[in-house]
Length: 119
Image 1 (cartoon, rainbow, N blue to C red):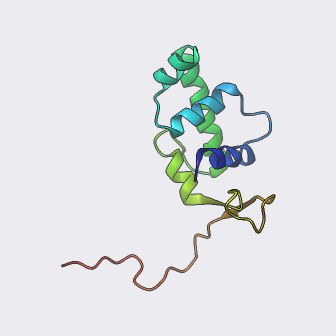
Image 2: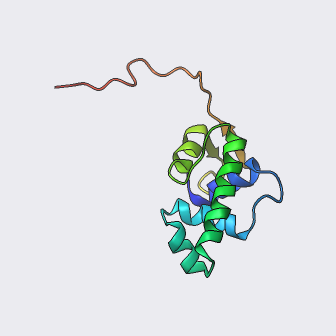
């Protein structure tokens, strides 16, 4: 999942109007691994303001996903719970379609898929 796909997903998960410029900036820059102080300094915001906006963002995502979302786990949670198909231009069969698909928790795994062969 790339950042642009994640931002589209964020728009679908959160209620309309809940994202603002700072929360979107926090999401984007956190995706890139930047800290709140670096985000604040680069954008010209007070560090405490960025931290408050981030806390609101993670809380809203936690409510939307039904589990605790933090700066450290949001990328992996989004990848585990969702995947995006038909968003890339490399799929010529459906160039104007975007579909959000949910992973099934009960989907069967191939036999021996989780086993490693030890020496």
